Amino acid sequence: MRIEPLRREDAAAVVAAEDELTVRWLSGGHSTVAGTAEYILRLDRAAEQGRPKRAFGIRLDDRCVGTIDVDPEVADGLDPGDVNIAYGVAPWVRGRGVAVRAVELVCAVIRDRGLGTRAVIRADSRNPASSRVAEKAGFRLLRVVHSSTESQEDGRPVVLQVYGRDLPRG
Ligand SMILES: CC(C)(COP(=O)(O)OP(=O)(O)OC[C@H]1O[C@@H](n2cnc3c(N)ncnc32)[C@H](O)[C@@H]1OP(=O)(O)O)[C@@H](O)C(=O)NCCC(=O)NCCS
Image 1 (cartoon, rainbow, N blue to C red):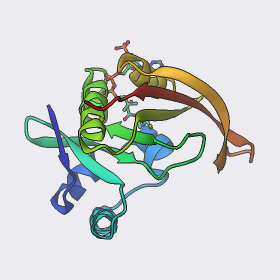
Image 2: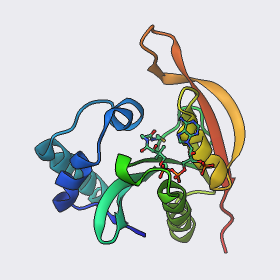
Image 3: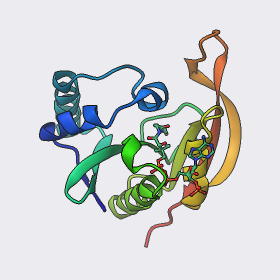
Image 4: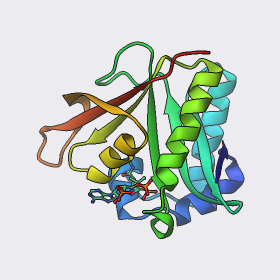
């Protein structure tokens, strides 16, 4: 398994890997191939202009089976130097450690590129699978906060379990 920068050609695979859980916890809406290709293009353009967010395809046997992104600009619930990680994998590969391995690989990218000093995962308190991925990848629970940007269906703020893993350089 490896992670590689997400390419526009991955758009169809990203859409195929999406299910109701991906929509609920990651993308926030059903994706189309054209919309996903456009999103990847926007990310590339933003990166060219110096924005630090990076998205990777998770590749298993050369097939893109999910995505993982790192964004040092996410601030909700976080401290300066924190780099937020978000991920999703296709339903047919879940439960095999793919997400945990992808988190470990992306932590190495954050450390090697000096993107920040701590990797963080903000798991919605209603999403135990995401918390479990963080714990299995060696993150510890830092705090539980009310999101300042995301709301639940009833209007109350989302409760985020914030997990962190220090990434000292060198
Ligand atoms: C969360 C997600 C990425 C996990 O991917 P995965 O490759 O199955 O993860 P792993 O196999 O590495 O580890 C999953 C762990 O979560 C556990 N888990 C799965 N569903 C669970 C649930 N409903 N409650 C508690 N634990 C759960 C698994 O049992 C496993 O732990 P274990 O090895 O101790 O049994 C995947 O479920 C997904 O894509 N969900 C939709 C998107 C999402 O929630 N993203 C998180 C936003 S940051």
